[in-house]
Length: 183
Image 1 (spheres, rainbow, N blue to C red):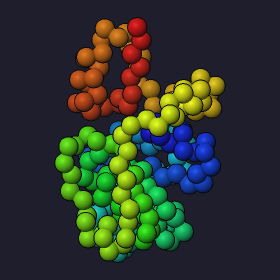
Image 2: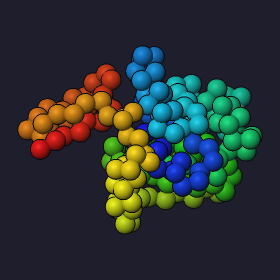
Image 3: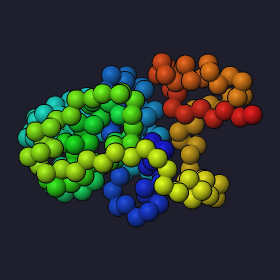
Image 4: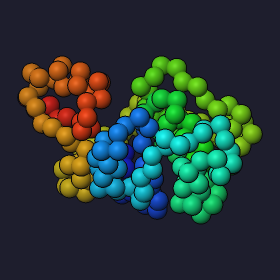
């Protein structure tokens, strides 16, 4: 969700957030969806029905929604910020033939990738991990209020409680998105 506020500020005309965890309850998805829209998403979709191996849009409501939102051809680019099999497959299914997918997230050290779709649709996959000098710009945009991070901050806590908050986040406690730790 944090990436949404940034890409919209740089002229990206359509930003679609797709839920990474289709096992979320409806209430959890509601919190995530609201935060995504508030952060700048044009739309927010839940991939619970997605069959990533299916290239036929009739096989999935998510794929059909992606095609509808992209004018029927798929998106030029997708940024995957989780690093798990289903979100990566969803990003691959969301781009047009010849499109590109940038993999940012790395929650899972190994994932399954729909290689047939990547090869036959001539997709380009990029991996991205390191900062490329944009950190000062992002901090500036946050401090000016140009990017509103409030929709993704679930709690503020003392730094001394950091370990317990990380454990709660790792356990995917309901309602937690991001926690700000203060000295």
